[in-house]
Image (cartoon, rainbow, N blue to C red; front, side, top):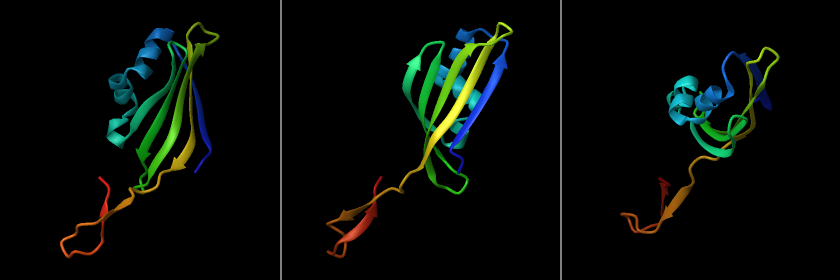
Length: 116
């Protein structure tokens, strides 16, 4: 797995419009298709019209749960528009759900059950 994905885009939009597109969950999900890919995210840092850092959790095509960080950086470009930088890094495979010991199984012996 690659250590970092780093992309830059020059946009002909004002910073506040780009900020709305990345910071409002329903707009971000529509743009990135986050819910379609089983993505959960939480805001780690927010500086309006400048920076948004998200804790990102998703399921890989192989079914593994992956945690990572996605950072959006908004700045001015030379043409008077916005440069949007997207950095996706800190990739980590999450452990599967832990098994819990059940002390009251039907047969009276210790058993295993998956955590919910």
